[in-house]
Length: 496
Image 1 (tube, rainbow, N blue to C red):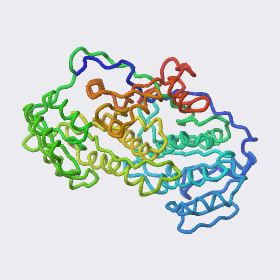
Image 2: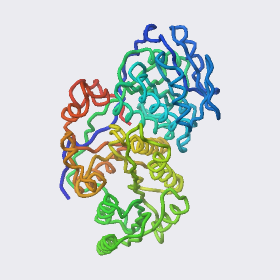
Image 3: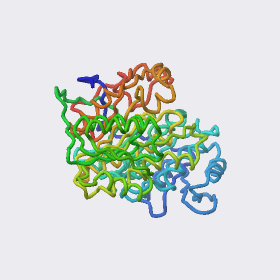
């Protein structure tokens, strides 16, 4: 293990208090599609848009497609309904506000199809026409982000929308997708503030409205302490579950935990170990740890219960690491509900199973392996970005509830992991991204756990080179402080 990793590897989302959005009535002209449930909390938005010269059409979920002058109904699961709606509105479309997700409960349940899949099909309908060059898309959530210093009650089910939105902004910049997170508790000024946001001419901004305040999200460097000795010790009388434990990242983590004194390790994997896997297990056992392989699917609650029981057999369960993931990459226009389900399931259902079944356990650590795709939303990975945003949100929710949680948004690794397996190192390096070695990764993980950090991006990046290579013109506002376009606010605002 290296003594210290690069000191500029760590980043966190930072919410900066910003000035009010400057809306103009001239920006309202044309048709506005407002995706809002009948019982939604945005009543009055249509009135404000109409007063500013717009023509609001409320879109609500229904089994059949119907379009009238002021209302429409579509099936959230029907791509055709979304295409028909956009085709009927035609070139007069000024803006689309998708707020169905904002009506969902704040409990950490799975995303509603009326939120995420409907938004996916909406993006597809918009970008397949010339409408995308003349309109704007606003994806609205409620309590999807932890913004204020005291912490907000995060609704993980809504965070997936942020992953989709970031990918849409990356793949289709002419659509000018904006993400707006409303206060978990609706306020009197909320509709007015939202209307100003819709009528402003800001770019693909990420905004949170809290009370009378407006915040924007920036990715910022995270200053970490520099320990001279290892800071995390595992318990010799404790058990630890690693989901995806026979994968490259899982085995790397298992070796580190064994070196730090873990007495018992349960490695959960969907497939039975092959010959290489069995050799790795035997090498772990030679360190003195008791190692058990549990074949099972993290999306199955019964399999998770078996794995947790194996980890805690004849000892106390002290930690969980969820490193499992699935990929099914495709551009947004080629994504389907099935592809989203394939990728979301291990992250969403898997992390929820682990969360629910350990909520009363006295854990020392609960680590969720997320991805840098949460923030960057790389082309072809809208489903993966959505899935990782969910576990970022679940980690924030757990910490708000007083439970341990660390979400690590990993960049590409060398030697192990998907990027190494697919031979993408040279491609990433052309974009200013360098791989993290397994030894560096474990030092970074140890330092994050020791410092009690709830979420961090761990990535080697030349941000100016990255933005120049990927975007035409300026990059997204999210990266403005890292590539030198914007000076961080002083003092620094809250970092969740």
